[in-house]
Length: 291
Image 1 (cartoon, rainbow, N blue to C red):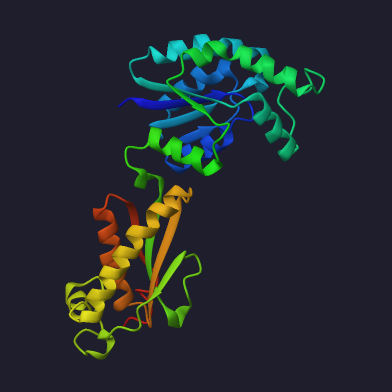
Image 2 (cartoon, rainbow, N blue to C red):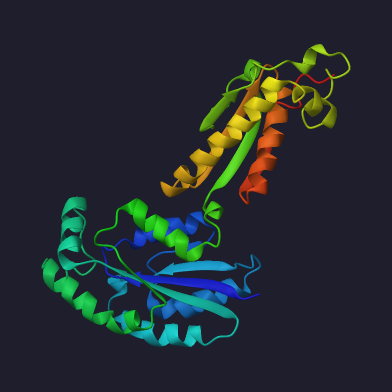
């Protein structure tokens, strides 16, 4: 299987750190500020490692000084290797935008000392040095008028086949008697529904079992609630993804965390999986107070 390698380069201050954050969120193993001379060696190490890394992202810039002149040759050699799928992402911004960003963050440009604090000269030199690498880039993004959210969305569109891959979703059940799930982003209280606990033949079963699910969903209010929850999540999840949220925890609570909450965790979890999302289901209190 070919290793996918994304090399992120371009002008300092153009948003490489934002790009790397997104790539890490969508499953790339990321390394920042790697000297260009070491890119090929590092890829070789990853390729031969026991972890079998398949997605690697490397950010390289001029902080490594004159060694960046080797980047052009290194990248060309990597792109010719049959077992590597190498893509170069080049990002830049207008000079005045970069200057404004450095003033706002009060950070030094990587070449600040080399040019005696003259940011204009540092930017001009960096832009000139990067011309050859820019010429072989597979993707080019000009970030002058992008917000961080817009840049993140652009990266997802380029490197994801399905935008839902950028978010991992955990759907969990819990019992209020043991405390509310504190890690959750969305908490739904399903104690308003009929409780299987009071049906003797269902008391010692859980919402993972068909008999309990059928009982809970035999009521019109349960079926209506399920459909409304699906509609709500269909509306909310794309908004969370658009804003760059990489992890979402949805919790369902009932009294003991055995019947109603598990039923809805299972049904909503399966629904989201059917929509192509990465979902983990967990039942926090399923083993408590069992006979």
